[in-house]
Image (cartoon, rainbow, N blue to C red; front, side, top):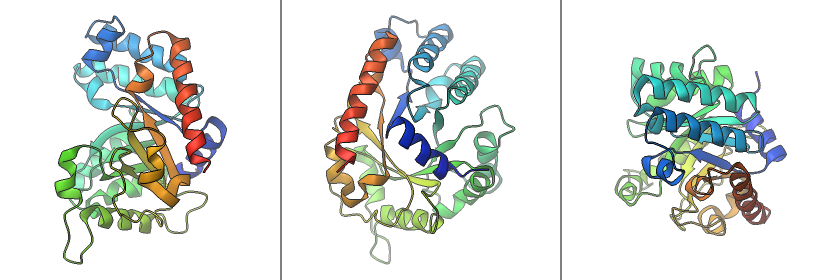
Length: 277
């Protein structure tokens, strides 16, 4: 089976460097004129899939906004994942899971085992029980051609207190996460399957991303305040590995499918201009 890094490299080459989130929060459903219930969720997800699944490299459903409706919401998430993959999009499920032992192994099985109903191409994960605690997730991803994006430097202001704290060897917590993921990707071609989440709003942090050899997911663009031009400041010489991620900036253009596609074309053009540098 092809690695996630290989599939991602090809998808970005064919469709462009862009990830679009599916974040059906109550305010956005209301903006679209949809009820804040399962039917509204279903109509929202189907519209996004119909507009974008055949043209965006990576689509990132936020699991919590489906889970809040219980079993029926999770059922819609399962259907959305299938539809996205049928249209050729890679699915990155935003779940930010992290645990130890058999529990993290169960999370890995839920999302990265091809036999499961929630099987996706990649997931987000939290390393704050130790990067090593995620080993079962890394191992199953490697076995089945999946990917894992680990939180490193996030856009939320509360994150800095933990992520930029210094360890005994003088590195920040974030840099230790970066370095451990870099080790997992050593020698991978054309791109490693283990990525990092680095917010586009954080500016120049002085962290070294040059050896990651994996994808760098950059949320925070658009409605959260960052512009494509800010990617130069955050990522510097590592721009070629960046996967820009937009949610509200694109989704606010709905529910008209043509308007959603136009929004994708606009942000993708902005990202291409910056990443070409």
